[in-house]
Image (cartoon, rainbow, N blue to C red; front, side):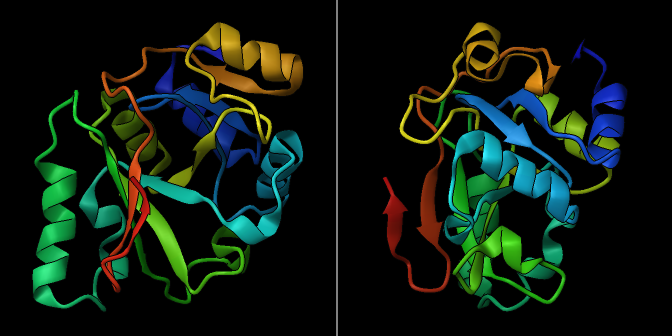
Length: 189
């Protein structure tokens, strides 16, 4: 199913289905992160091992505030700054944060931390807000293939296996960089 309605797309997520949607730089696959069956469907579609974990995408800081509580004040401010002071053309930043008990193991994979990004992409903000929380966000491509950069690309990869929220990609040229908020390590430049 193809929709341009954010409310419809949020309902698709609540129904435990997988959704393809445009993000800051590439198309993503998403689902309700608390729905293990939907999550396993994403892994099946991507041919991705569960050990790797995935990114959670939020529309506002309040949706992930509980994951920032164990950071020292300086790091917390840095994380929030990268999420709130980014222009539309700058590369987004995903942070590895200490996971709390609310994050299912399947989201983290073999890791103690969880990858989180608060987006500035208007459609993604609207989707997370309509869903009333963060969602899974992983690139819309089978493992080893290039991430989809258009509705046509993602449709070629997955055809009728998905629901689609049509819209425009953001203006960033690259997927988000990934940084560890505890160690300061750069995971993906």
